[in-house]
Structures are given as structure tokens and as C-alpha cells.
Image (tube, rainbow, N blue to C red; front, side, top):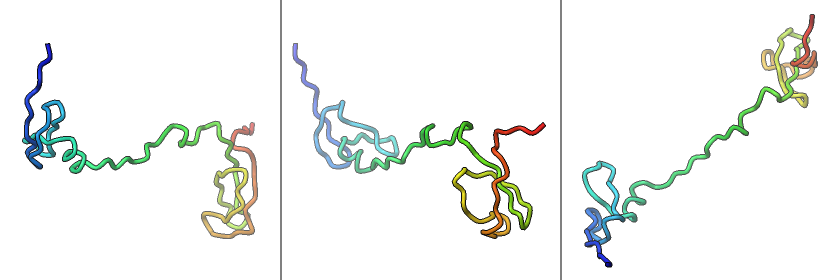
Length: 103
């Protein structure tokens, strides 16, 4: 037994579509077709942050010290930059691994 669904007009563009192809508009008061819905709700897919983007605690970080101002900070092993406190680029030294413990 094949039943046909009645066609219902979209409240925005007046195109007649089946009831299962209608969605509520932004206000929730009217029924609109899929085409009008996609026009009202463009798919702005934002990049979702995954757990692989977040640095884990197992990443090696190393302790650096500025010889000039004695400021201590942690960076990656490949850090060859300026002191974040005083801005001196020639006085940053690697002190020790972050995971090392001193007793």
C-alpha cells in the first residue's frame, strides 16, 4: 500500500515540498524547505580542536635562564630566541630538563 504525502508550501519561497523535507526557520514559528534552511543557516564549519592539538605532559620542555636578568622560563629544546622578560637575545642559557629532579 503506497501512500503519498501531501505537498506543503515553504513559508519563505512558496515551493511545494513533502512534509519530511521541512524544517523550522530561525524564529521557530514557520516551516521552510531545505534550500531556504541552508540559506538561513550557512555551514560555517569551524575547525574543531582535537586532543592531538593540545600539548601533552610527555612533551619535553627545558628550563632556560637569562644570564642578564636571571629570569627562568621553560621552552622546547630547539629554542634559540630572546628572553621573554628583558628581550636580550645573547644571554639565554639552557639550565636543565624539566623532568629532572634535584634532591
